[in-house]
Amino acid sequence: MFLIDTNRQGQVVTDAIVNQSIDNYLVNDLQLPGHGLMMYVNRPAVIVGINQNVTAEVDFHYLAKHDVQLVRRTSGGGAVYHDERNLIFEHIVNGDPQDGSKFGDYTVFAAPVLKALAAMGVANLAISQKSNLVVNDRKFSGMTMFKNGEGYAAGGTIMYDLNVDAARQALIPAPKRSHRGVASNRVPITNLRQYLAPEYQNLDIQAFKTALLCHIFEVDRLDEVETYHLTEHDWAVIDQRLAEKYNTDAWNFGANPGFRDYQRLTLPTGQLHVNFTKRQDQLRAVALFGTVGTPDALHDIAEQLTGQPTTVAAIQAVLQQPEVLAILGAAAVAPLTEILTKKA
Image (cartoon, rainbow, N blue to C red; front, side):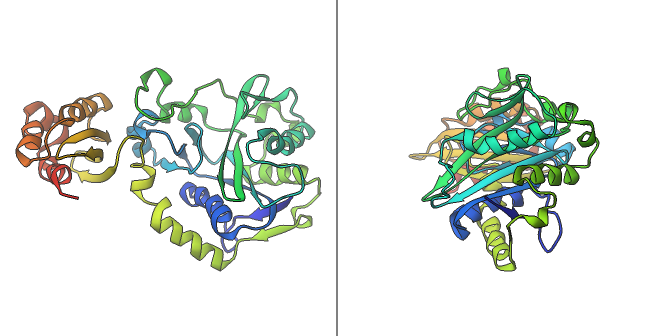
């Protein structure tokens, strides 16, 4: 196993959208042969699975107020909150690594992390529900995988000292979720800091990352580890993939199950995201979400729009109702009408 350095020109990258796209580049484009490991830190972000509906997972008002990124990954799994006191690790495998690693086997990828944490003083570590890493039966890491050809990525979180209160506010509680898409399974979580040996309990996140990696690779210093450093060419391709897909609202906000189209509107009342499916001149499915109004109010408006013919008269008959104008504002009528009636 070798280490993959994700710094850019010697600078730590904490943009969650950028970090989330690196694994896709490594698997889909670069395809380094063998078994690599990367570890990084994100600024506050909610990461949702590829098959999840963001309207059922996140509180958009909280995200906007606290400048929390929303990021959709290309693997499955549930929604998780990241911040600067949380590590993300990812194994990148291309071809035959000749070390027993295989797609779908979370145990082999969890083992180096669990062994290292045990050496750092954490007791009662285990794997639960196939892909959760737990200490004293409380989750500190959720793992997921995605595959492309002979390459795949397998990774998860390591909660060192995550802001658990922020995580709870950013993510919608389970009973409120009733949308199409894979729902997250909320389970009791805990930070690792309190379980570590005293010498590891008061580190900054980068120092903890270094200590953990040294234990994983069983070295005293990281410069003793075989390392691949991302090149300028690598970053040029990553930037291109970001511009094409991973850094777009259509991917992070709009790629929700059950909808074909997506648009975003910036209104005087806030940000409005519009998911919809049109078929045979009729709106077959509509979802409105964002920081305009409340989720329940936007859901009621979307329900009224669903089933309407895609004509200006029909759409505006809904949007110009006093109770709808009170939520969306008059400035929403024209652009939203255009979005929902425009011919493909």
